[in-house]
Image (cartoon, rainbow, N blue to C red):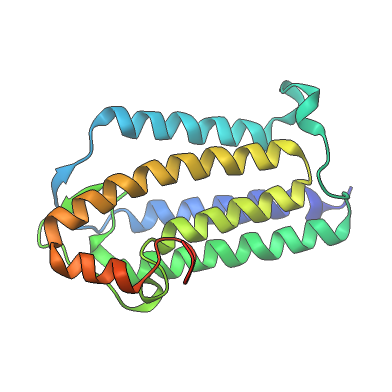
Length: 190
């Protein structure tokens, strides 16, 4: 097995997480924070996803079933999709600036951002993450990758619904108008 096959995805995801931690330092103060229960449940789901993707040997063999032919094409197509998704998410995070938070929050002086990637979808960080996990699933070519994608999707969909509710409460008609113009996750579709 080549070094690229072994290290490409860990490097992509670790670099992404390191960037995220660095950027978390300079954000606005929190005015309203989602309940701890939902934050903990989301963290548990993400730990399960990491186990699915990083520790395949401790999982049931049925999750090793290949939904795609395993080879260089699926690996590099998946890598390209993962990198594109993570870069889109990074662009969204940079564009959001100090309004970002790890959890669903309302910030002090919270602003409604509707430009940049937020003109394409209302939740571009989630779109980028989901794209990254989809690319990872394609590269693994195994059922465990699809299961990881489904778990992340469920987690982010739950978070998105709460965030949407709070944005409607906080920004009122301006957020409602934004929702009518811009899809939540997939441009022009969803």
